[in-house]
Structure formats: C-alpha cells, structure tokens
Image (cartoon, rainbow, N blue to C red):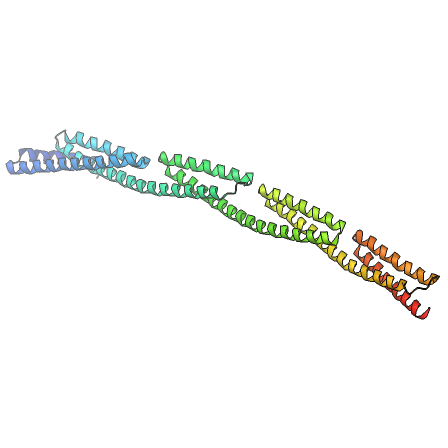
Length: 351
C-alpha cells in the first residue's frame, strides 16, 4: 500500500471522526468537548514548560539550549494555530505539535541545567587557578630570572582570557586555558621552591665561608706571610662578588665565586701552616748553628766554611718559602740539617 493511499485513508478517517463528533447526541458531543479541553490543557502545560525553560536558558547563556528553546517555541506556535482552527485535523496536529514542542522544551531545560552545573564547575576551576597563580607570584623571589617573569605574565594574560570566555558562556575554551595556566602556575611554584631551597643553602654556605676566611685571616696575621695576606684579599674579593651575584638572583655564578673564595682562603691557611712549620724548623736550625759557632776555634776556616754553608741554606729555604715553593724550601732545610751534622762531626773528631 502506497504512502499516498495511507495519507488519503488518514484524511478520510479524520473527516469521518469529525462528522461523528459533530452529529453525535449530546453525550457523545460532551465526550468530544472533553477531548478538545484535554488538548487545550496539554497546550497550556507545554506553555508552562516553555516559560520555565525560557528563564533557565536566559540564565545559562548556553547555545544548544537556546536553539532547542527556539524550536520548542516555533512548534508550540504551530500547535496553537492548529488548535484555533477548531477542526478535527487542527486538534490532531495541535496535539502532535505540542508534544514535539514539549520535548524540545525539556531538552532545552536539560541542556540549561547541565550548562549551569558546568558553569559552576568552570567558575570553581577559574577561582582555584587564580589562587594558584597568585601563590606562585607571591613565592617568586624579587630577583627572579627574566624568563620566569615572562612565563608568569603570559599565564596571567591567559587567565584573563579564560575569565572572558567564561563571562561569554564559552566554557570549553575557558577550561582549556585554565588548565594551561594551572600547569604553568604549578611549574612556577616548583621553580620558586627550588630557588628558595637553593637560596637557603647558599646563605648557609656563605656564612660558613665568611667564618673560615675570618679565622684564616687571623692566622695569616700571626704567620706574617705576605703571600698568605694576598690570598686572603683575593678570598674577600671573590666572596663579595658572590654576594653581589646572589643579590641579582644569579646563584649558580655566585656559588662558583663562593667556591673560589674558599679555595683562596684554604691556600692561605696551608701557606700559613707550612710557614709556621718551616719557621719552627728554621728557628731550631738557626739555634743549633749558633750553638756550634761557639765551639769553633778562632782561625778555624773549615769550621767557619761549614757554618756559613748552613746559614746560606737557611736563607735559601726562606726565599723558597716566600715563593711558595714548599718542596724546594724543605730540601734546603734538609741540606742545612745535614751540614750541621757534618759540622758537629768535624768539631768532635776534627774530620
């Protein structure tokens, strides 16, 4: 059976039903009026749902719900137009159209409610991200690297754009930007925490190096070594450079100069230590040489020659110490000691 024939039969059926309603006795006419009244109630019920949806859609600003509402309103208008035709076919189409309009209105309500829930979720996301970015800004040191400052400024602009999307009801791009800003803020916080830890560690090391330099400086004054004094001045200069670089947030370079300052001070301490050790040896050898001088008989050229050799070796050792040549200084002192033994043997045996 073709569609045209089915449509014709449907129209004939509507016409027959309408004739029955019109020509029916009073009881049957009352039944027809009840049906019409029920259709009117259905239409009014749809109107109520559309009105409720209209308020929700206006608040949500969600495009999909607005489109569904427009379709519902258009279908409902057609339904009322058909109803006012006061024909059986009009009533039938009115009933069908208002059902369709109601479905569209319900869809608009559902979309608006979902959008409202999504709106709350996006708002919460934006507020959390804003707090996180503010925390990252507060944790960033005042002497932050310029590249980090640029990253922060970009994140702040992106967050502003995310808020703009939110105010325009564009929640998806708003969330996308908020997620990007959140990741950036967390990364900035990690960097800031590392920087704070690095800064605290640097300050501890700086204080330790300062105390070490002060201690070595006192020792250098006592050992009266000019080279050690020069090393102490170099250590102080490197220390000040480290402090200046740290003030600019350049902790990596500051650490290198801090290490250099410690090395200068360590070299000065070693030099003073060796100078003190050598000084003690020189004093002992000099005292022993003076003691043996008293035993040399007048006119004893061999004895005086050995004694002069001892003093010459001691002077060589002093020169080597001044040039920070510890090995040569030690060798000169050993030679002086051997010469003293030779002098002692000569004075004892005459050989």
